[in-house]
Image: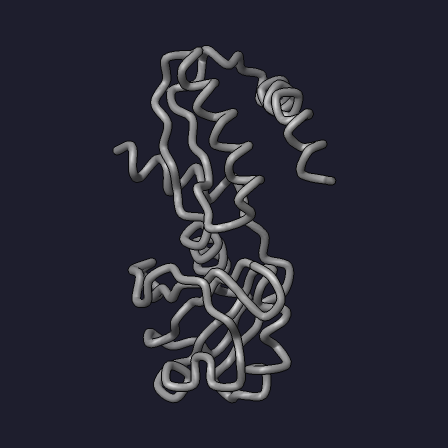
Length: 177
């Protein structure tokens, strides 16, 4: 499987990233990881590697919510989305399996409005929230919800939003400070 090839190559990817940034591992101040939700195997591999690096380098480890990092990336790129008011909510979605997604709701200040959960999507999903708010849906789980929610006047979909180290680092830095 693809996940196993990543586990075999992860240390090589870390080395490449350090070379690209022209820094040595021991020059890092802290190591940040995306703690999920997501694939159990992928998370386990990432966390294990990060813990090993932290132990060996004697550096702190900071874990950041993947959904929050996704929401931050969309909120920071808001000029791309027109006609959004203060009451707009942001709904990152990570594909789980079948019609299930990991999701949460955030406001434009990145405050969690609805906690992280696994939801099985159907026609009634988000109906109450969509009556009162414009909701921006994004992430790889949002694609399968388009057919269910895409017809609602308050549902906005943004394609191709992926977790980014840039926003994981930004949230980790805030946590560190």
